[in-house]
Image 1 (cartoon, rainbow, N blue to C red):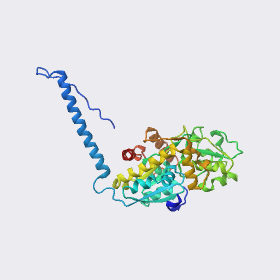
Image 2 (cartoon, rainbow, N blue to C red):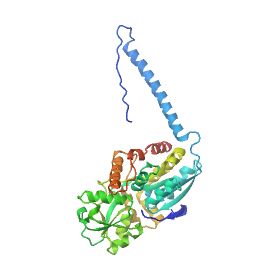
Image 3 (cartoon, rainbow, N blue to C red):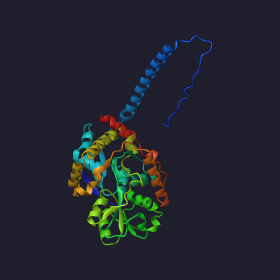
Amino acid sequence: MKRKLLSVITAVAVTATLLAGCGKTEAVGTEQAPAAETAETADTAEVADTAEASGAEQEAAADEFEGEGLNEVKVVNIGFLSSSTTAQISAAKNYVDDALKAYGYDVAYTEFVTGPPAIEALTAGDIDFAYIGNLPVYTGVSNGSKIKAIYKPPVTENGMYGIVVPGETDIKETADLAGKNIAVVAGTAAHAYLELLLGTAGLSLDDITLVNVAPADVATVVSNGDADAAVLWEPVVTKVAAAVGGSVILRSKGITEDQWFIAAREEFLEKNPLVAAIFVSGAIQADQFAIDNPEEAKKIIAENTGDTVETWSSLDNLQKVEEFTQADYDTADQVKAFLEKNDLLQGDIDGREIMVNKYWKKAAELLK
């Protein structure tokens, strides 16, 4: 994404269906129309009512996204992490740029190394959207940031988090992490995953020693023995494993719902709802390209980042996601518990309030 970056920031750091009672009344002592005629009349009236209601709903939806005074922003500022497949493909194939420019919007990009500084920039209004992991989003909301998650890109089949171990190690399973020095980028989603992973073996963060490092330093601390293992996310986890001559074990599949978001400021969404949907429409196209063309996608990203194609092997089995579900809300509850347990929860977080499906639904309409 070199040709599109404005700057690189380096820093360390988530109906009620109203069932109307169809009461049945029966007229007594009055003249009634024949049953067939009554049914036909009722059906006709129901169709008319349905059509009228549908038209009203469509009009309301159009007003919600395209009402007067909305979508007046000129330049859309997008923050991303280089580990975001969606961001990399969107830029290389111009999906997001073309989608926004077709409506007259210009685009500017800022790269971040980890999520926490991206959330700071999003909260401050320096960027309007961010491709980002879940923990920084949840932490930001807990700290008072007005942020929504509006789209969830595809996830890798085996889980996006894992443990890197060197070539010679006695760590084979989760229980073997007890008493070990584990490198982690504090404040990232991998940090939360580590605690969940330890919990599957009856362990906690108190049973290990955390070594807080920057992503660029993880391979060094594992290679020189300052850390016995490291917990990271794709593609960094694969890249570091190759650098230390090790392997990736204990992946996150089955332990937590992988979450990677496109997040946005509430204020921006309120003023520019159609812009958000247009942006997501470009992201959807980028993700579909990666799902349909994994080999080409890996080559594109490797060229952009300077990584090997093998580093991006997680693209081989991307799992398409269409909307936020109960599993995502459960993951938000897991993260909330992590933050609370580690005295990091400043305010309440509710996944059902943070994750919003309407923008990707509108984006899907725009792509029809």
